[in-house]
Image 1 (cartoon, rainbow, N blue to C red):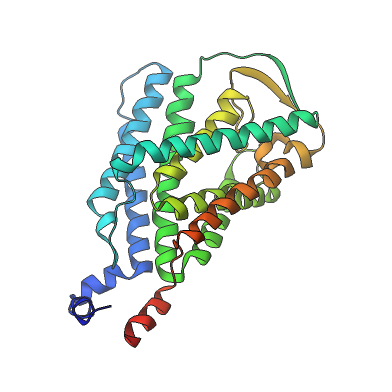
Image 2: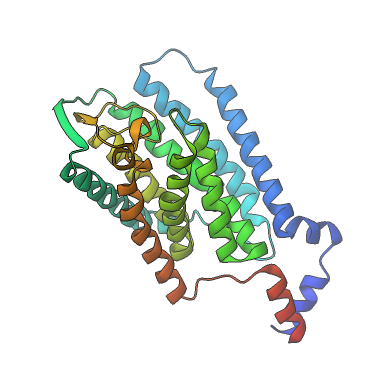
Length: 299
């Protein structure tokens, strides 16, 4: 690194250096995310009576709009290396590829579950929940969760402790967050951490933007809930078919759904590992803050 770059960094005001420190930037970002989420909940209370689908869409738009504003106005400007992980130019390809991965991955999970007779279609479903499901469980949930876990927590933990620490910590936190879902157990949270946490973290490491993990996350939820009528993280859904999970909890995941099954874990670990390996081959691994500092001092 050139002396000019080092000089500019050293000459920054003290307050700016404090704010740019990864863990401080993370706290600020999390606080802004919480503030935006709280504001969205308050604004949602002011919505006039509407059809359920319209209400869900309006709530999703408010939540995403406020979170995106906080991100674009403040969070992207934080850190020693500011960047925007939500550039619109990367959205079409990232969302499309992510959607394909998420859709195919859960189709494989359901297919194997059917072969083991733990997933059965027992009747036709309907599309009454489509708009509500798309807005709430698919678009809003994927966007908000990825912004928090990958766009904020992963980014700043990675800036401080490196890529591997960020992958482990955010995967664990992602699993822990799902412990508060209906029908959750410690086993289901561990499964979420291992399969989904690593898969979504790997997608972020590879793409270096949030669109790929958002697309993957959205397709994962939509496919299991709306297409195959499988509980989404413990929450019962109504899909295009009426389906039933049965058999050993180890295979079916019990009332939490196939995300908690050994089938989901075994099939999705290779997907997450492949994404991480591709990220490594692209040189997308970030060293810890102290290692980078030592490298600068040695120049």
